Length: 222
Ligand code: 5RP
Image (tube, rainbow, N blue to C red; front, side, top):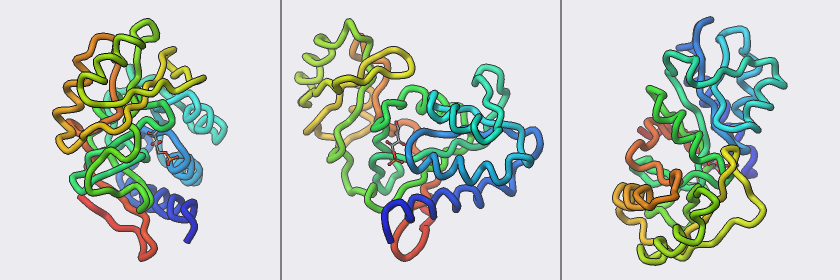
């Protein structure tokens, strides 16, 4: 099965997972990326069964609105039962690397608010130890060199992601070759660097459920 078919299968599985819990007042958190896009397209099929969504990026908000799904500011929402999003890597503890699409900060905020974070990913994203995928860090533009130097001190190789500005007006530095065998520790250390907005490690708040698309079907991992 092609990778897109696996992504579609997990998107559909996520819809089946959340749909029984939605009512006309429910607002759902929606992530960013190609897997999340498949989920949005499935969500459109049941758009009269829930109230609306909170988007983790401008691109996601645009796609939701194009389907006629109301998009709410997170500050206007009392509670979010679910956040559904993809990942660039996941380990068996459901700790993630995210931010390949540069939406990591808003993704982390929506994930922090949601009671249940459902990660949807094809099996190529599953690893034993995080870190083959370069770790994205969102950085205030004027702090770029300072943050780069601090990353080197922590043992990583910082690479400025050319031509990318986040929805928050910031830049992305991707960290290569960093030892991520203790993800919570690295997540906290990186966030202590002045000028870092946040980093793409979701270890302090991992996913609650992983729907993993494999050639043997969708596996539910908790
Ligand atoms: C965006 C993300 C995405 O979830 C991640 O990049 C996975 O994307 P895709 O579903 O296209 O493989 O973190 O910032």
